[in-house]
Image (cartoon, rainbow, N blue to C red; front, side):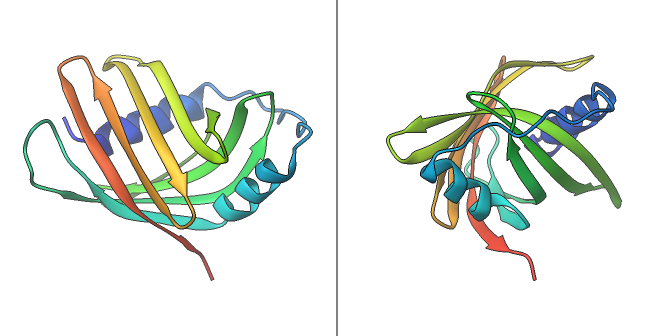
Length: 149
């Protein structure tokens, strides 16, 4: 099972689980405002691995807009292309902070029919790196973050 399939499944499940009304934006401090600006209208382009296999696989996610909607909860408007199809969804992601560094934090995220997945993705300037796992499947992901024109 590839990371792309995992992310695709998560986005698809999140799209079906959405409520029609968006949550109001939460109050933000200076670091959170900087994070929102740096992660809105970007493309995350990089690679992921599966298990101990050193081979890397291309990975690409487009983020339209992010908004803080709770204490540690953020809404990401995301798009992913997979198998010549484009999937769009708004995904609610907990964001924790390691000092001044945001970490996207999914813990035991249930994807119906697939299983439970976890991920930690650290954002530093225009780069990202992290790990993902699901039972016996796991890997790493890393890449660059580029503002869209």
